[in-house]
Length: 274
Ligand code: ADP
Ligand code: MG
Image (cartoon, rainbow, N blue to C red):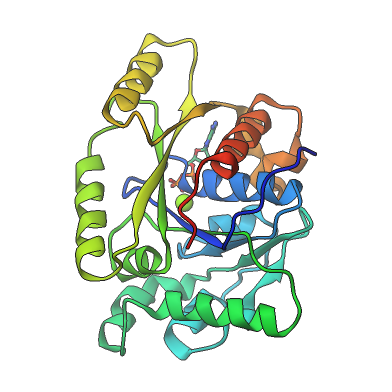
């Protein structure tokens, strides 16, 4: 595969959009896979009780598996729950289980409730260094479609927000709310957080609407939108049912090439690292 630059320090990106079905999980796992395919060390943290990222990466996330839930609520080290993805070398996942559905409420009464994921990732980074494991290059946090404490934890653990936007009529709706939330987090909880990247997904080149939406988003956020666009592709949506990313399921498909381009751009952009 193509060689990509290693970041100066671990880049932690939260993939967020409070709308469901816009391609958050698909983007998190496939950009992660594209970077891992280039030899970078990549961890995906699944913060969605649905566990779709865990499924796509072939990681067991049945209810009895220790998961991000125990990390957040019971102080279990992240190192105990991280598993290598059978899909690709250099690719790891901290799985979600259905127990996470209760975590938003359970977190409320815990000490430093907003910072629990950040602390877990920091401790894991130290653990890897102490154990002689290679430094992580990227961490992608896959968020649920809500703005509860799970998402707040993801924002507090990250230095960058990656927003996937579906090229449809209501694309920009809700975006200002998301940006306001990021601004609140910046002000009160994590001053280094920036929205660094917007990725246009599920692009249907046959419709004028998709082109119009893409042009609108680029006009609003000229610096943030990646040049690469992810096409609507059946191969992308099929891959998770084989517990694969599109990178291995069909590496020459338009979807895989789209995510490879997006990953390369992300890696090559001037980065704010940690
Ligand atoms: P979210 O995590 O934001 O809820 P998902 O990544 O789960 O969104 O995507 C929603 C659905 O759309 C899934 O069934 C997924 O397989 C499908 N999907 C995502 N991206 C594409 C694409 N580029 N082409 C076709 N289907 C896609
Ligand atoms: Mg999802």
